[in-house]
Every structure is written in structure tokens, then in C-alpha cells.
Amino acid sequence: MKNFFVYLSAFLILIILALLIWIKKCNNEFQIVKLQPLLVKNYPNQKDEIKEIFNDFLKPEFLKSEPEETKNELYDFFLSNKNKDIDKWHNYFRAYYEHFKKFKDSAVNILEIGVERGGSLKMWKSFFGKDSKIFGIDIDPQCAKHSGKDITVIIGDQTDIKLLKNVNSKYGPFDIIIDDGGHIASLQIISFITLFPLLKENGIYVCEDTHTSYWEGYKDITNEYTFMNFSKYLVDLTNQVHFSDCKNIGVSFFSANCEYMHFYDSMVFFKKKKRKTPAHERR
Ligand SMILES: C[S@@+](CC[C@H](N)C(=O)[O-])C[C@H]1O[C@@H](n2cnc3c(N)ncnc32)[C@H](O)[C@@H]1O
Image 1 (cartoon, rainbow, N blue to C red):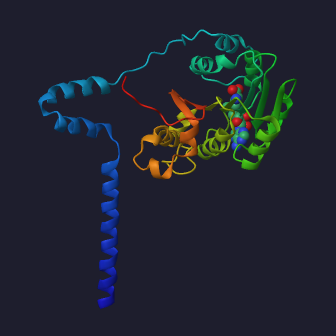
Image 2 (tube, rainbow, N blue to C red):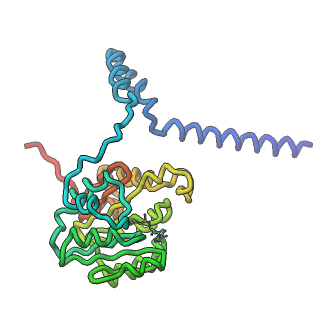
Image 3 (cartoon, protein in one colour):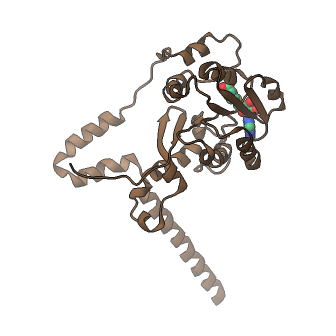
């Protein structure tokens, strides 16, 4: 009987400890609803103004359903394509054009994960021009038929790290890598961690369709470990050189080699560029 009470007490203490850890974790979590009262605490004489700016900032809006206003040659190609073989969201073309135009008409090396009907590979070839080389990876053996002059399709799984490294050694390094494959968290994350470090200097990595981070059925690791949450972690690393402990332990490869991340609806762009310690002075 005495043992029973010892075990019960130990069990209850464990539960309480777990609860305390959980409460502490929740309190540290960034939540916009907590921000307003915290700011009021710092600026009590602006209580009403803070309330007003938060109300305006968080006011819900319904987006209009109107055609995309983008005008550029990549989007024109998509709009005039009659083959039904390109699968892209209209809003992607503005961002693509902005990030990709500097590679146009050069001997650029492009890899797209996810080939399906092959139309996007043809679109890249037409946009980047005669000196470009276009590669696609797809798990579906049917996609092999989309190989052609200057377009090479490799059949394989985007989570197969050896395959990705082999593709890079054989056909890379790449200037641009586009992940439009399976859109499942572990697929996106494994491909990114494998291929981003292998990109050419000044290269661009794009992960498409990141809205799947919010869709059931695509969160195959846990609900938390989505590509968007992974990207939010990486955003912090772009500032890692300013972390208080980095003088002693250095920064991560990502921090040392990612110049910027751009976020759009459903896409994240990463630019690879070796960084230097930022210099600051007052002049
Ligand atoms: C959305 S489609 C690609 C569309 C194409 N990029 C376009 O813009 O027209 C996704 C493709 O990813 C492929 N896929 C799914 N899981 C994959 C994996 N684990 N590895 C490689 N490809 C995969 C599918 O077979 C499919 O063809």
C-alpha cells in the first residue's frame, strides 16, 4: 500500500512537471492576440491608439476574384499555351519573372522537381532560351517521354538523397531549382536540405505550393513540421550572425550562404550567396 502511494505521488509530480513545461512553452509562443496588451503595458498612455491600430491591422477582408494583373512574357507563354500540360497558379508568374529574368538568354542550368505532363519544362526552355539546359525529376516513369533536345527527365523520388546528389554531380550544379513535386512536408524538406547547399553561387531555390503546409494530408511528419514552419525557422537563421552566442559557435551553413528569402502566396524563394559578417558604422 505504501509503495502504491509513492508511485502515485511520483506519477502526479511528473504530470505537474509536464504541465508546467507545456504552460511555459505556450507562454513563449508568439501569438498576435497577446501582443496588443503587452504593448499597452509598455505604452499605457497610448492604450486607445494601440487598440485602434490593432483593430485596423487585423480587420478581416474578403479578396476579390479578379483576373491576375501580371504582364510578362512568361505569363504570356502560360496564357497562350493550348496543350493543358502546365500546372501553375496564375499569381506565380509575377514572382517567377522577377527572380528569373536575370538568367534569360544565358547558359543557365534549371532543375524542376515534378514534371507531370512536361509543359513547364518546355515553358522554361522557351523562356530561358537556346543556351539553357532544363532537367526534370519525377517519380512517375511515364514522365520519361518528356525528355528531348535540351530537356532531360530523370525518373526517381525527390526524397532519394543519393539520387538527388547523383543528378547534381551528373547534370549540375544548377542555377535554379524549382520544387513542384509531391508537396508533402518531408519531400519538400529533404529535397531542400539536400539541394540548396549544392546550388550554384547566386542560384535560386523555389518551393512551390507551400499552401499544402496548411492542408491535411500533406503534413506527414507532425502537424508542426511543415515546410512553412521550417521556412520560418530559416528566416531567423538569416539573422543568426546577430544571435548572442554566434561569436563563440559560429553560424549555420544556411545562415552563411543564404542572402535572402522571399515569401509569396504559396511560394518561398531562397537566394544562395556566400555572406560576409555585416559591417556597421555611423558616417
Ligand atoms: C504538380 S505536378 C508537376 C507539375 C509541373 N511541374 C507543371 O508545372 O506542369 C507534381 C508531380 O510531382 C510528381 N511527384 C510526386 N511525388 C514525387 C516524389 N516523391 N518524387 C518525385 N516526383 C514526385 C508527380 O508524379 C507529379 O508528376
